[in-house]
Image 1 (cartoon, rainbow, N blue to C red):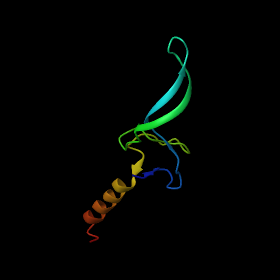
Image 2: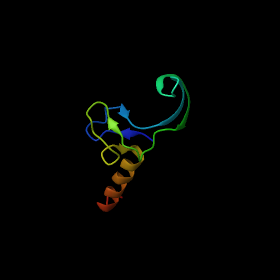
Image 3: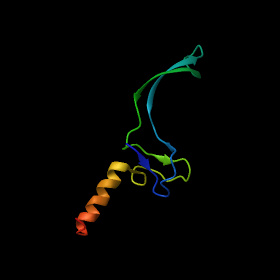
Image 4: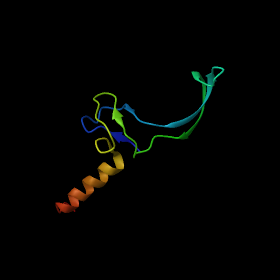
Length: 84
């Protein structure tokens, strides 16, 4: 999986959701105070998540293409145009 910003292929940094397990410091009521340590990643970034380019703000899975999807679209366009 490789995200490609629709505004510039040179943009390489994105924001998206990952689910992690953390060891927290809490107060006597169980309220969050601070992260002590990230223990593990339960689920890493997914192409179906919302992805935001941190350089230009292009957002969501419809705007941020992934390398395989972009290659497939390009091949289909070439087939339709009779390039093969």
